[in-house]
Image (cartoon, rainbow, N blue to C red; front, side, top):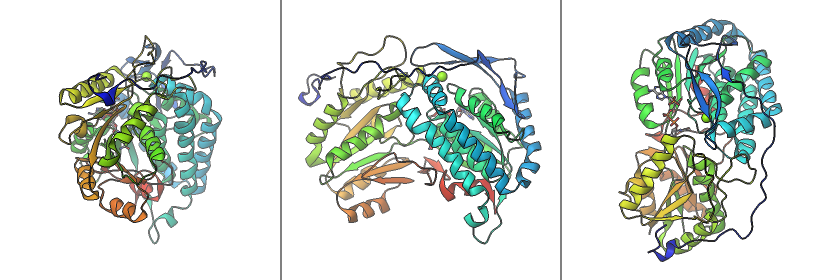
Length: 489
Ligand code: NAP
Ligand code: MG
């Protein structure tokens, strides 16, 4: 907090405290998990395991297998063997499996939510209300397509692509697994999935659900491990399609190794998405959109609205409102149902966020945070904050921080807003806030972003395609557009 700046003085302390409301669903976690290959859990050839931690407490939750070359080979070969019979199955039959998986996710939703929160650090109210229901929704939605593919691509005969390698990040572990696996299976492909190193546990529960659903062995295989395992999968020569969600940095490396033969590639990468707020916007609604856009899931969201562009005349009012709202956000135990902001997923990410906020201040930006609430002693925490006095050239206005840090800037004309918003190598999402319909359409047409939300933010549905432009990647996930990546026409 910069006390020299009057606008940055301490904000509202909570007027009253909530009683603790911990989620108490009992959860069994094995001491150790193997790899899921050919329908069964097995010890890795590597004979090596690594620890998966709870970032809110530092406790070890379990040990997870570290897949080596032989393990990845086994997984890819199981997927190859399973391919002919799975792809020949009628769409109706494939749909039955997907429906079963979706229903089982719903039945085990509470357990999956608690596990997601413990392994990744996100608040239980998010894993319970967003991640897990949306994961089920993706299986339901794609079950619906499985026997209707010929209508998705009118006049064409869609065929499966083949064996799909799929690599996912740690911010929405089960949801990203669902985004990848559900459309692949609906279209008759088989998969090898590599979850992120810090959040493998819900993907392994999903493997149990595949067993319960009677999914034929080899149709989905899950190889856990660190970046090296991802590299082995990306470079594997028997993969027909590679789908990667993660950082732009790793995405670029993957694009190099994956560009062989006629292998398909989709990349869902990072972002630095802008909110553009005009003076005529409904400000209360806009503030909620901004709060939801950047402080949701600790800012560990690829499409986080991390740049705030406000019309100059409402700058002071926005600062006042944001500070007020910051004061009511509760940071702490992710398993508490009242928690808004949970733990930062891993120590490297925490250091990265801290480094950016320091760099922003060193470049002259002013930090606004609320320090009246104490943080837990153990675990990885970062207070949500925003910075004012940010210039477009500042590092915090350019780089993806992937934390609860908002960089605020101003604009005077719509033209300047568009220029500033598009002044980024990324192009994942954008939010436009205004009362004028014509302006919404004009802005949406000219903003360089894969997804543009108007007078709302962070709305997701399995029926709606998601993906970026520029360095935020290519290809779409969700909706009819998302199916395209998983079929040959
Ligand atoms: P990351 O470091 O790029 O890792 C993503 C996945 O790739 C992880 O499973 C990782 O394994 C693996 N990996 C690491 N190095 C690899 C390599 N050389 N070859 C193959 N795989 C490799 O990203 P992250 O830190 O987990 O996630 C945050 C990033 O994901 C952010 O940039 C965010 O914007 C992006 N994201 C994008 C979207 C989207 O839809 N556009 C959605 C969510 C997240 P390890 O975990 O073992 O490192
Ligand atoms: Mg973990």
